Image 1 (cartoon, one colour):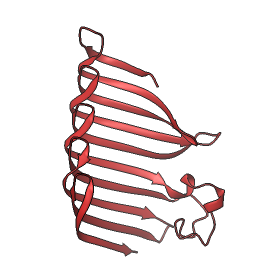
Image 2 (cartoon, helix red, strand yellow; image 1 turned 30 degrees about the vertical axis):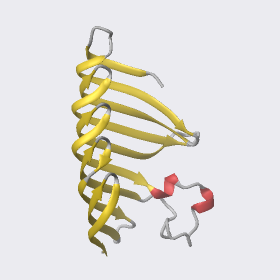
Image 3 (cartoon, rainbow, N blue to C red; image 1 turned 90 degrees about the vertical axis):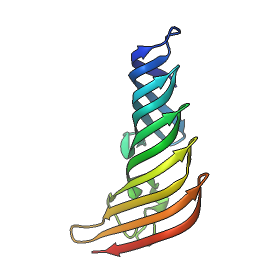
Image 4 (tube, rainbow, N blue to C red; image 1 turned 180 degrees about the vertical axis):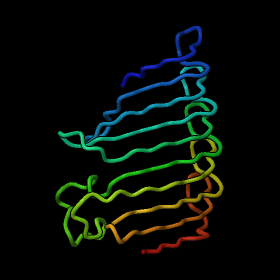
Amino acid sequence: DTLYYYGDTDENGLPHGTGAGYMRYEGMPSATGIHIYYGEWSHGQRDGEGTFFSQYYSGSDNEHINETINEGRWKSDLPDGFHRLLYTFDIYKMLDQTYRRQDNPIVCGQSEPSPYTTVTECTFVDGLMNGEYKEFGFRHYTETQSWNHVVVMQVENGEPVGLEKDENWYY
C-alpha cells in the first residue's frame, strides 16, 4: 500500500508538520478501501491533532459497506488522548447471501439495506482505550421503526472493566 501525501516534509521527504495522506487499502479478502488522514505528522507518522477517515467497498460492483471518521490526538501513529468516532455501516450489505435470511437475528428480518450509525467518545493511551467509553447508536429499520442504544463503560488497556449503562429502545 502506497501513501500519497501532500504537505510539509522533513529532510528525508517524510510527512512532517501539517499535511494530508491518502492510501488505498486492500488488506481484506472481500473488501477494498481508502484511508485519508489530515493533520499533524512527525517523521512519517501521525503525531498530534488530526482526522482519520476510512471507507470500505465490497464485491465486484464496489458497493459501499462502511465508513469511519476518527478525530483526535495521535502519537507515534497510534490514537493517544481523547477521540470522537463516527462509524456508519450497513449490516445487510456486509453479510453475504448465506446470512441474508429473514430469520437471521443479525439482519433482524431486513431484506433491504439498513444503515447503522454510532458516535463514540473515548480516551486512548498508546493505541488502547483507557477510561470512560461512551457510545450512542441508531439503526433505522423502516419508515416507522428505529432502534437506539446507549453504552457507557470503563475501559483499561483496551479491555472493558465496568459497564455503567446499557440501554436499548425501539420506536
